[in-house]
Image (cartoon, rainbow, N blue to C red; front, side, top):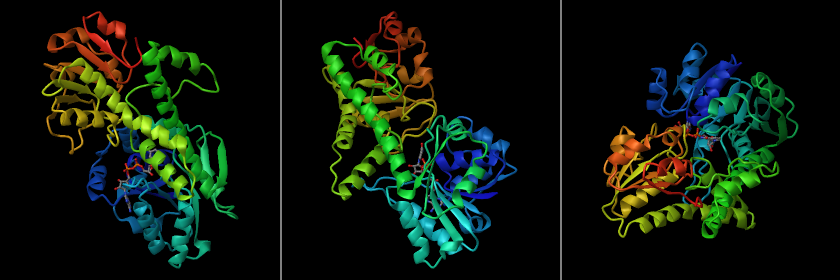
Length: 429
Ligand code: NAD
């Protein structure tokens, strides 16, 4: 089966590599010519564990190109995996998705199954269908399918190969697409959840909104625990054993980030308000998340009379471990706030680079020792495994001060206290 994956980002590249590994002929296309140039040279422009190896293993049936319409014409199946960022008012920017729909409408000359992997607000897939019809494409030439992606950056490949479910939203009367999709995914052993186009869109948003809610919920509980001198880790263990709750997504810390949860919760709020539903929980989830960084700034301000001109080391830039993605990273928000407050920030991350806009008073170092040198305080902002295993005895000798602010509650307080360091977490008395 010849497949065209449109969009060579985190989702598009992982999808293209996995589909090629399943034995399909895959052309992954993108408008970003620089990205395509790198991919053609064998360089993978993002960090995702196992991705580079999977791409090079399948290079005989996986190609990269910026000739989009040529590959649309050649394929019988098209995956849309382009970005769906937030507009300033919270509405999803669908311009990339719709420009792909226009591209398909202009190129289509044989039957295509058009599968949307991008996360799109309720009603979007129906609009994609209508766009093609409005441009004169006959309905017999295509079907639109919603097949939202649930992979997590950092474990994208295994999430794609072993998903907990495959959600398929299809049009009424479409009896062709499900067998086609099952054939594409024939190596995957997972239950299919089949619904209509808008149902599949809502499943994706509900899933992300629910996970974001768990994170904001535990962060709010941690704020209460802190005031009562209760260890949040005990509370997490105490509730996490209940199968109705589960221990996942119950780690308190600096808040959720990344390219999905923030924009998707906002987008769902927008979709609700658009239909005169006030989404009170979604609004509270975002409010808690927005103010999490303040909590850590307050903790730092409590440590020093004046934060101005303090040397603060921030370990972690990416929004979570095992990715180089810094979109909506709470670590980046913290760094930006510290820089605005006049601190000198020395940052380190195993994979991520500081976004261009936060360069004032901020230096990114190539190793932890250099970042920690002369620090008044070290902040753990992303819970990379590397930071859980640091040589604190050595780091203490490099630091000027003795405070470690664990903004992910991810290191053992007893372990670092034995070196004369002061541990500050949230609700970890
Ligand atoms: P991304 O920003 O990493 O990649 C998107 C790519 O699409 C870019 O390379 C861009 O150049 C390309 N593009 C834009 N317009 C194009 C066009 N007209 N033709 C061809 N290429 C075009 O985005 P991503 O993180 O891979 O996310 C893609 C979609 O998947 C989004 O809707 C996102 O919400 C969803 N999603 C993301 C994740 C994740 O963890 N990143 C997980 C599940 C779902």
